Length: 326
Image (cartoon, rainbow, N blue to C red; front, side, top):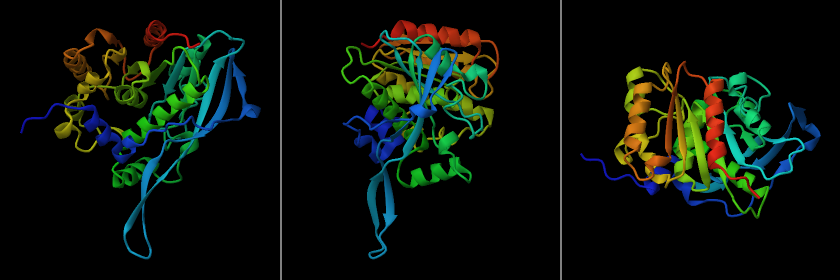
């Protein structure tokens, strides 16, 4: 059977199911916890909270024995990072955290408050004058569960026709809503994404599905499905998307929907999770699509990491492709 031409409608339906048809049209209500703000290295870090986009949920009607449908919202915990004393227009970026099998840490790692200093890319961008939003994917940090949360979330979302990757995408789109709401009448409403590993995976899918994302960086976050299968490893629970290959195709085909918006694929030669051979194939095939000149590929020595050299290259990429908002 020959695979049909992939479409954005099929991609969003596979990832988000019914939720893909319910984007929010109003700005989110954001609560800033300024009493618990902290300063680090010339950056003001402020906790904030806001509701997620709507996600479908089913429940059993105790009288009829039938399933009924409704929508609910989660509460998302986030951090806003801004350089102190910086009054000039800022570039907007969302820093998406990694997985690393550590559910105790989420947004605080790219914000530079916990974890690996190599993962503090949100904090370092704020030091460069960016306005940065970091938030927790479920079930990380403030959204952690008291039981094995990742397989449980995958289970419950699958019953509703939503993928865990789709939920992560919805939450990232909501972060775009939040950043844009902080300056409701921008001349240049541009937002960038940057992420390592899981964060890089989410960045690529979300940029394909949300045209408001001007530029994105995925470090150690993509390869081909074939090459990942060949490793014999089990990936995070957001990685497998039911029906993706027969209904949509290979991973690189999401590039068809970027419409000339810049994407940096940053990869490491010795990455066991995202094999470099598959990354090379991802880029080679993606460059067959229109707008291929906007796809940048950079390889680095090392394993599954985000080295200082790689981070500096990524920051320069965002500097070139994101305008300062007015």
